[in-house]
Structures are given as structure tokens and as C-alpha cells.
Length: 113
Length: 114
Image (cartoon, rainbow over all chains, first blue to last red; front, side, top):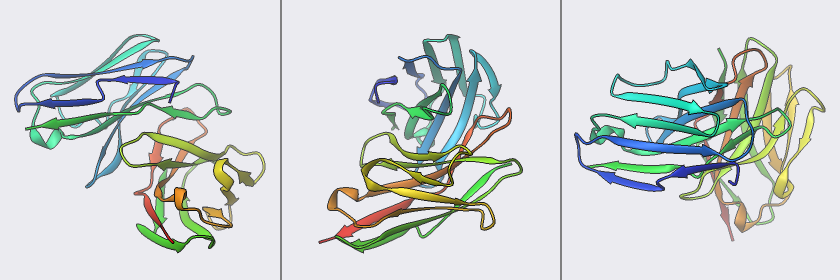
């Protein structure tokens, strides 16, 4: 998924620690999305941005979660403090236009122990 | 609000047989519809999309889907399954208005039997 680079690919952390997930869109876009995937809940939208402005954060589960997009080329999703139930795969995606559709990164697999 | 229902969380077909994965949507505005495939431990790859052009959409790897407004369906088909098609498939809907979020179905795990 050359359009979106996510880091790290894997993260293992202890409960209570702060976790920061990073997303770097390579190609141009107007929209950026953060999704979470779990076995129980499937793919859930957490938050999305339009031109770096948060549009809908109703999917952010708690105040422990926060997301920023300081510029068009970078976004972060932070969890503080982390809990075991936050263990999931977190995806970043972009939308440039309807011709290209939504492009997803490879995801960050987060494990909180 | 948009929603997607995928009928059948697991589908098994024999190699060479027809693949049919079902997707029904609910949308208050003309929808844009997508099928994504996810291989184990990988991200989501776009198979095909419907964005109000031709109702029969052809995608990658021999897959196609037909948008049927009267049935609110967007089923995914492939005439002949290959072992490499084994993966999880997600149908998703996005509104064409100001809301741009993609809403996913629960996914269908496709198994291809030799």
C-alpha cells in the first residue's frame, strides 16, 4: 500500500503506558481516516479529517484516545493510558478522489499486556 | 446513516467453482460501494468500486460486482475460484454527500477447497 505508510507495524506495550501510532500519506489526499479492527467488532471508524481538520470523532471510544493531523503529510493516534482492550489492528486510510477510492495502510498491530 | 450487511460469515467453494459473496446496503443517499480483500496479517486491498457509473463493475483478479438499486445489493462474483482467492472480503458503503466515512460489513471469510 504505497499510498499510506504506518508505523510501527507491531507494538507491544504494558497496560498504562502511552502509545502513539503514526500515519504518513505518500500521495495527495483530502481526507484521512483512522480505523480499528478487532475480531469482536470488525472494522470501526475512529475519526476522520478533511484538509487536516477533524470532521467526525464520534467513533473515538474514550477520552484516552486522541488524534492529530498537524499537516497533510502526517497524523498520529495516541492512547493514554493504554488498556488490554485496546489491543487491535489500527489502520490509516486516505481518500483522494472517487477514481482512486480509499487507500489503506498496512496497519499497526497493537498488543497491550 | 449507511449500513452494510454481508450474508454468510464463511463461504467455502471448490477450486474452479463460482464464487458468490453477498452484500446488501442501506443508504439514505445514492451510495458509493466498495469491495475490499484482506489476506492474513495484511491491509485492505481494493477489489472494485461502484461510483454511479456502469452498474456492472469489473475489478482485479477476475472479480466483478453488479449494483442493483431495486434489491439494494452489490454482490461480488468470480466465475472460477482459485486457491489464491482464499481471504476475507469486506463490502463497504460511503455516502456521496458531505459524509465521506466508509462503513464496512462484518466480512466474509472465503475458503477455497482443492
